[in-house]
Length: 507
Image 1: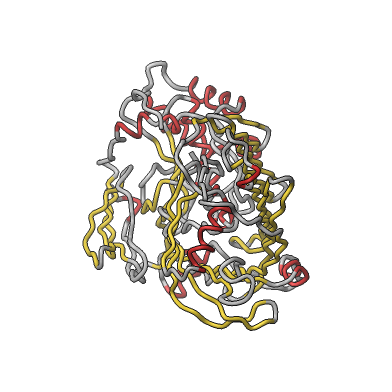
Image 2 (image 1 turned 120 degrees about the horizontal axis):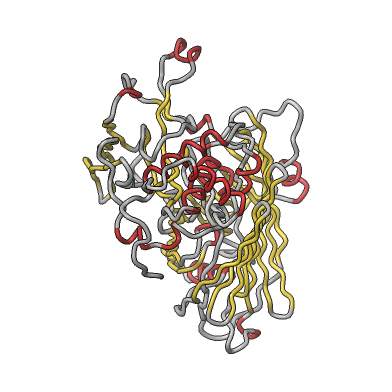
């Protein structure tokens, strides 16, 4: 939305962390997979023809399972106060990340006007809110829609940031509006339903959502057999296989979500309509219970070992999808990485040659250098924090006054690696300001800390995620000798020994 001349020369630094497939669903599950995005907003002005019927209040409980094992609860509500409707989704889950037990809670609220209650000058969307709690750390974000602009207030660690952006003047569907559009299309017998909306977990942008009816089946929901319709859901820019299941008969046909399904490498994830007692019981740790593990399960075995990888300046890897029937292999050329498509079928990329060359980095584009998001503070990369500014200044003093931005970037990279003393998986998502104080975290914390330090020096920086190659531990090598792709959280630049999957949206 903004155009500006480049603020630095030819360098744009990316702080990298381990790849996890983006987990974006109707419910706030993203933080489970260490993939965290900036929870922001955009204008939702969708208008329905004619008078809408009032939306009924809802109070629903879902049991969340991974590979058939109960791991938590999802509680969704819809309430109405004087024409102001609030849709709430609260998630509580227990999983293992590595050897560590992770208990996480997330809540999103979306408030919008009922059509008949909307003041003539006001947008349908009023505000959205997001709260995340993990390991006694709390993240809060509030987005308000005010005349002519959006106001985003985020609190992470000890810092509160308030930013404003212009209000888009195109028409989109708010939360209940988009549900109504799906309902109307489903009841009309359509097999494909399209609408445009905002998904707060995807950041401040409007996205296209396409739901395609793929079949009908019978399933048990809270002890009752019912006929249901199954819909594959594609969200623009989100490469995840997701399906939603709705009753195909009765008063809640096409309206009440009965089940959400996602195909993930660690097992199918399903949130199924149940009852409060069952759902809450699934979110309670039971002594001796073996919960699903979500990090080691993401390791990717390679067919052959890469010999002397730490001595090489160039590595070429042929990458293909296990199942390309529904997905396309979408890898970016950026940093030290270049990608050449080798095989396509039905318009989907199935195989690509990935070359990582440490002597041939790709230059940042003019558009990237002009993007103020890469030099401005955000909720996670909160580079306006005084502690971060002081840390970066201390590093800067150790360098020559003539040091260029690339030399400064390398020095900050080394500092970020050394500053984080406790390197484990017990931290879910911490902002850069939190990491600066706690000195603890894994790949994500290394990434946001480095990105923030770079931004304090006016060096454009973004967070990305990918696969990093290392050998398995010695005892495991003796057993099967299989090398795996994981993150060593080492002080590597973008692309040094990794396959970059995508630029992340921490901003």
